[in-house]
Length: 623
Image (cartoon, rainbow, N blue to C red):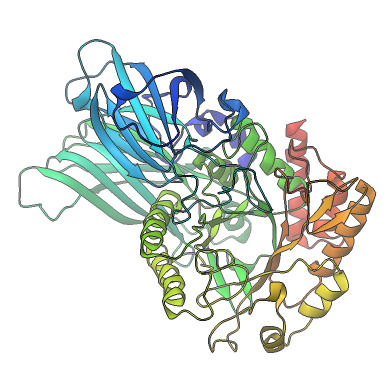
């Protein structure tokens, strides 16, 4: 099924965890009681004076929250009464949080049920045992988030009172959806999908939680549209098979697909930006008699990502990376999308300008964005938000949260690379510190261990010590200088003599390795009619000048043989940084068709022509 067809069935995208969907769930977004604890003095719910309300999931710093307080405070509190759903004996009630920044504590009916540290990753707690008689149940959340703490992953969140330079307003507390679901006593807890084009198969890892009996099995049905691809059943296994009751079990299987042997059909089944074919999956957890215990819906795709020499390979062929830097902020709602359509609109605009992907910068994005990127065909580079101090504590915090992020997202076909570090943030002494170089190398190899199917950029921008792709940040405003610097096949000269940003591009003795080079930040042309507090890396005074300068720069960058792709800075104006191709409210500064021609070139190859066709279909749908 194509992404555009899937758009017509968009209800699944509203599900907060789109690759493991159940029927019985309810969103808890909306109005909650709220209190600000400026010094984090309050430790128990009964100490709190509930003096206002907030719209969850918007951070209190944002206008959309109804609070709009951008001052310093160290903790916030939330309270809400919810209705107890109807539950059969043995069923469980799970409480989910998409993201709470930074350290969360949760009480249900006065019982503390969970804590979680990490502002960008989800957590869940079973609250069945804390439920009380009657329908009304009380949930209280405390989020502690010291605005001056530079040892935690914080991305673009400013530690100064007012946003400055490249940093933006803070995000405190709940900023992604809160929801509940009812699950059976034995339920599917986690699934992971991988694909292998060499063997023409889909890899499945599934984990079940609860007291299983021998013979518990997992039934899988996979299809694309009305075409069935596979229908199989697998029995769960455990280290405790000798016992009569299993507390957890796993399935690890490779699902073989019929190799059609015909190129047109094969290409139609593969996922790519121009043809984002999604494989829908129905999964049933069954007992030995075939009775359905749990039922979920999921999806996956068939595609491969690899590195061959100096090029990035998608589905066995070089893919020209045309990315745009995406900060993922909205004027009224900060890091939280104002609504579901905001994700769709952003992706349409990205593709409408001729890009085939985004580099999500210093943000682990909402899974619903990844859902739409999967279904509408957008390549995504996922990057860990940085901490800004190097200490044992910051190492432990970032490593733990990065592992959670990779586990959450590694089944999404849209993601084609992982980026643990950006511009040596959090490792400021990288050239001279053996420990900091080892830290970057450790995160590179840890990421490859967790997911060996994708390229990893150990440190994007400069000072590479362990990477599959050399990412370079270069904001030289003169296209001639960009052309001179990267318009050569003498890569050794580039690494020995060029210093974009005043930094070495590689550290160590690996300068002879042949790797893809991607200009992962460049441009940054601001449209500014007058000098004010806003800024960009260079200025254009009128839309016509912006179009002219963007076209001239992209014409050079697209032609450079040393580059495997590029990532332009940036998609939208973001607070004081006004170098977007779109205004903050997503209005284009230049006609989209003109931007698309500049991004892709007037002499597009076959893949680019498919991108143009896809873009036209998307824009028709948007209208």
